[in-house]
Image 1: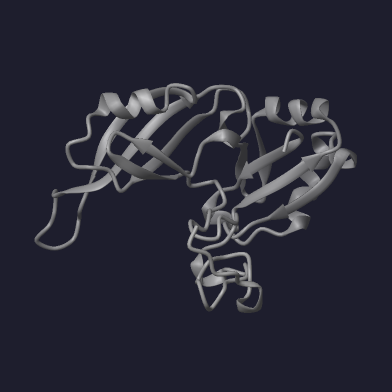
Image 2: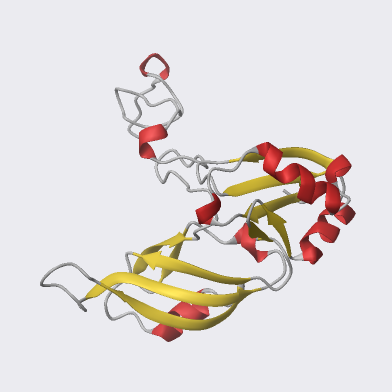
Length: 201
């Protein structure tokens, strides 16, 4: 991942095709240095694998470029400002605890409660917090999918990042799209029933 660049395209411009990236990458002078390109389950996030770290730096330093009718930003550029959501947090969890938990990744600028909008529950606090932070260099790749904050094991959702299936631990798919082997005997992932060895250890 040292030469990988994640590109966040505008949602309104979907669907995106590989041909949509030809002109902007040519104009940036890096198209001959693209070693890999593709998308994941999130159709407006594309990944580039550059041939050298120098080319990656040139692309990320550029910040944004135009694709179709909108502008695309690099998620891996320096000093990235990021909005994300934390799920499954205790109601009484203090904002200071969230700031401390993310200190090594960057500076948390704002923490707000995510409140319900459903009928008869408008304005009621949920177990979700929205945070806005300034990432340290390269931290966009290192942010965990789950982390302990106080007494809660929080789910960290970054809109531009491929999802993690929390049981099979594979990236880029949700439960309904899981392809990992699952044992019908012990229900664990990574093996089939014929390979299952029962143990009381």
